[in-house]
Image (cartoon, rainbow, N blue to C red; front, top):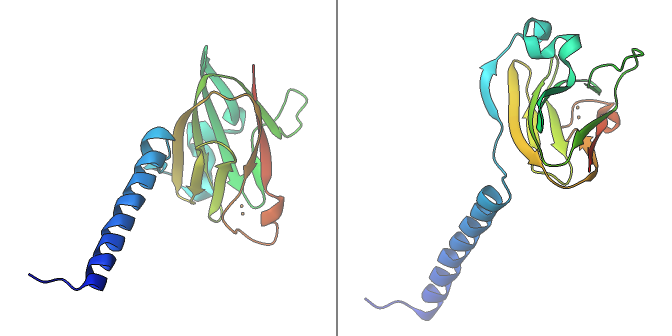
Length: 167
Ligand code: CUA
């Protein structure tokens, strides 16, 4: 079979870019821990409190045991509800010791939001009617911004929170 020179070049280019994309995908998935959130659980968006994790007293950081935490968040226009502190003020910064295994559970009562912890592998789409879950290990101390990366309305740019990983 005779292949024209240009045809060979394009074949190599096509197959080469396919392999390159697979390598990039594999690197993200296996070395960087990037994967889609689970959507195993459905929930009534009009009554998220019926689901234990989203009762007001369970929002924010819940310690399971040493180095294991569950963080429950209700994302709504235009706020992340991370619970309240002992004085009844809304929590804006959540703190986790480094090396902890953290399960994030997030839902929305209104529209689609994002839940991206910049600089980590946590990046979820939050859809009303579903509980988005993702488990990760936070190894690097620092301050991370939690941002909404799905356009959700006029206050979209005001929707953020802070996660602090301490030594
Ligand atoms: Cu919430 Cu954008």
